Image (cartoon, rainbow, N blue to C red; front, side, top):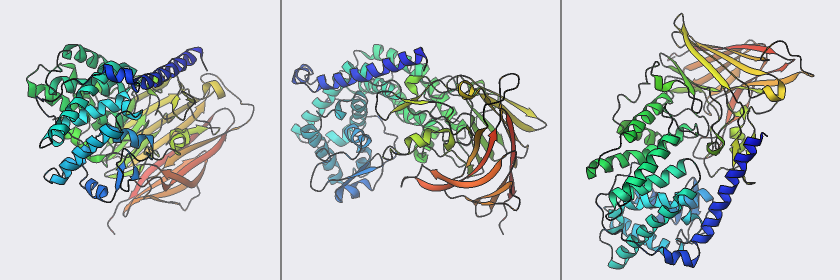
Length: 573
């Protein structure tokens, strides 16, 4: 490990230790007394919550169940704040109160409003001093949730409920103002500043520091949102979550008739266009660097709410915003209804790489509304066991050398959270047109230090989108290399869980059925073709069995494998 990497790891570990110390201090009586309640009992506006509500949530509560973050707690006769949390993610979502939106859908029902107010009172009695409740990012989410549902929480409430709720909101705003810089780097840091801006725009008496907060927010936004609209983590799903907050924030500026800083709408437009760029033909986001199951409703909301043109239309291929950047580089090839998205950039910086995957030069392919090849994706937070597997190179549609991932994963703080180091250091790509076909050439050096080899890949998509030709090469940067022993390699083609695959009549072919009357054939030379088990991690019910086509061989120092994927039948017979 390089000295610079060790220094970054040490700094991140120190930051985590500092956050733990801050949490201990916040639970102390002295600081609680210092944070005397401030006034938050009058609202200029109540912003819109764009997240999709679930009308069945009240039914689950009636059955004494509380489902959050993919996990369910059985309450019995207890408050959700009195039961052991099934997962940390469940606890964070519970104390963040974003689930209030599920009660709003039944707001005409007095029982729903009574339940919302009762839950807040229960939290004030049982939950407000817990360690999770005091995490800055959780405080930020709670502030946004309570402001966005102030009418649900305060209208028709008793004088005691109104006063305690308003005082607690004011205290949270004070608390977040004092602790926002202790939030983890990345989306959590941006969320804290977003919440404070919501407070300054929506809550009377909290606008004194608006200009200073706005300046800090815009600086953090510029740090995290890259010129192509992607996020510094290289995780496309993060962009959706950020936009679900930024779009209502933009609306708050307009409702208050306060000048909107130009950088905010510009970033929003770039991010929405980026999401359109990263959509497959089935409407889901490509599964790169921590993206798992796409919340299709949320994605459609931010794309449609943003006011751009047809959300199904990809950005022009000559749009300079979509040239790969060192941090969020993806390439898109599209002919007719065939769409290919490929990862062509190094890992994000260490501070942003907690969910990064070692999937360099991996790609996903969709045809019409059918995904044909997919990475296995990221599991829901409740499914912790597959996290390391999801990040490995073999879980992506790319080449893996000697059963070794192309980027190392190391613990940040001795716990399960990991970060991809700066391997590969270089990923280069070139996209051009040749005789109507799209040609993408790329390579990475993730295997150079350990094995002395580069992985180079060339994809050629035919003018009609019905055929994809590929070449994968392992080669030294210069000259000729002979390794001490042949190195095993494998090239993976993962299929969706509902796809069916079988060997073709020839040993070098396999046939894929992605829909009742939609078939593709993969043909390979230079490696042994086999059909093997895989896993699809993106389903609500948990990981599902799937299939993959694998090309295996041995590399004596350099080798070339050619393959083609052809759409062979799509009839109605």
